Image 1 (cartoon, one colour):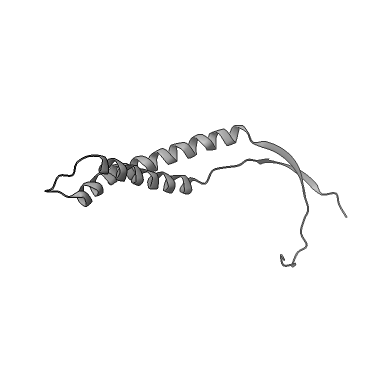
Image 2: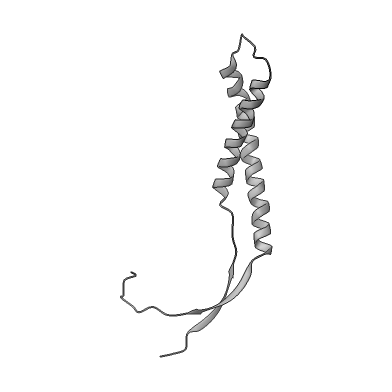
Length: 98
């Protein structure tokens, strides 16, 4: 049997971008709801329409803030990445993974 070859691999913890964007958008909607409740409602427009209009901005701002946070954390994770040496063991041809 031949000696297994070794390779250098880098291991890091990367954030999941969609999760950050979705949570940011949700927090933006919640903040928009709270801020809309703090101010008096125009009776001609109504609360729902006013919240819907401002939610367009709040959700967008929250999603962008979440994406920026994910990018910052990804850059930070790249700097803290660790390198390891691993042995590559060839698998037998025709064997199914279990």
